[in-house]
Image 1 (spheres, rainbow, N blue to C red):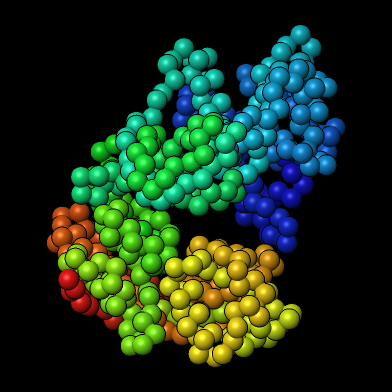
Image 2: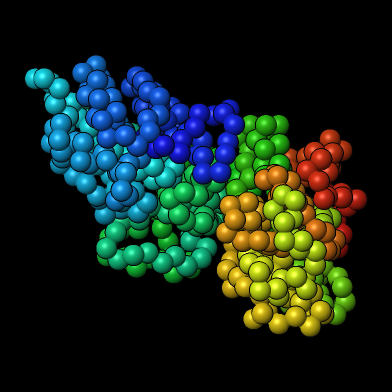
Length: 463
């Protein structure tokens, strides 16, 4: 349900949301042995939703309504279930997935089980697995399928509300003798956290989270044996890593690249703790103008490291289409009518911005939004596209991906930093072959704003 929903392929206008949850939920139901009927999305109309629920309940074993379960003025689902049946539950203490509804709907003498799932995509998929999957298994007379479990070391601190059971999405891979799990960005609407997730970590009620290095049990979303064939990348975000992951899975079935975006500094620190195979990094040394080398020497002094060339890319200001506020350079960020969106501390883009601001004599305190942080270039572009910000510093490919304009400012070197042992390992060999394939470099350049003169070549060996 939702007046704002449109079918895939329709022309979009501001405020529209493409309706794809039903495709995901129906696929899950079919995977678990059920037959799924997808009905057209309904506008937020009380009578229309009531009629559709009653009609579906006469011909189906279970009715699921997606969205309309929270506390908005047009979230009618719980009231409708109360009116036409019996409301048993509205709200469960899990995160994400609070506003779940469970009940029974009566049509004549027939009582039909009913589940209302939240509209946010991560919440919808998670609660469908927690509630619908065991229901279908019981009806089919089968034991509920248990996902494979693996013990892993958590790579960073996680804070969780005490009164809720939280399901944390993580990437998983084996680095040396350890299995490591890296938390992905939270939020029930962060769809890419579902796409990237290799597993789920349950944080029980009463716990306040986990410290870095904590041992956790991961419910895997992929086979256990694939963990050993997964490259773990932790560090700076770049769209070309997604291309590499795509090519790796396509050319070498069973191989995968698991990436987590924590910024360049965070990636080098993860390498120093033995939590990643490599880190994407683009840290500018203000004194020498060189990228990454001085930081590696400082943060990885005792580790033999290979600096693998990846891409040269253009950084600039991402602005709305047509650049209505005529934002052309860093000086415009201090204007009263301009709202900026920043990257997180430790990100190479943030390091570059702070350096250029100091060069230009611009006080960060004069910039509206300087303290508002996003963790990827695409998230910055999305903030600009939605109108939440007038501009942000990022790469051309992210601006192009969302149909935005771009004001170039800098060219920079983005490298892959890895222990020399990883460079020489069988695990990296397939990815290295892809990096050195001219066809892959051509795909990278097609994104816009990239040059690839050193891609796949060792720029330096340190330590």
